[in-house]
Image (cartoon, rainbow, N blue to C red; front, side):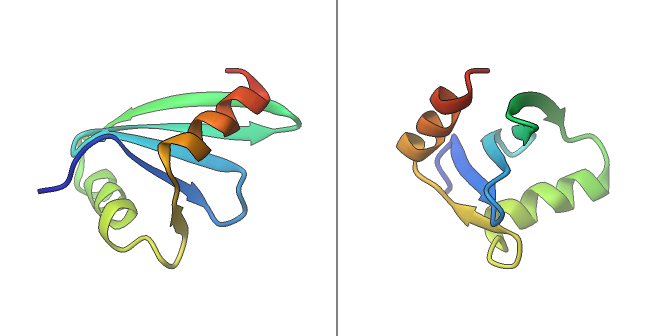
Length: 79
């Protein structure tokens, strides 16, 4: 069984994700040195597939990051 939260980022390091559980995640996206956050609740199959890929098939698009790396990113850009 997977423990939550889990942390991922896009390989371009512009978006970080906090996966709260199997039904919810938060994306923190860097745009023009401004950090935006968006909370997603999985309700439809494409969203469920996206979240499952992020957790289990992440190699093509995401990197696993530690909680410390995630917090450092947030601290650098203050949400």
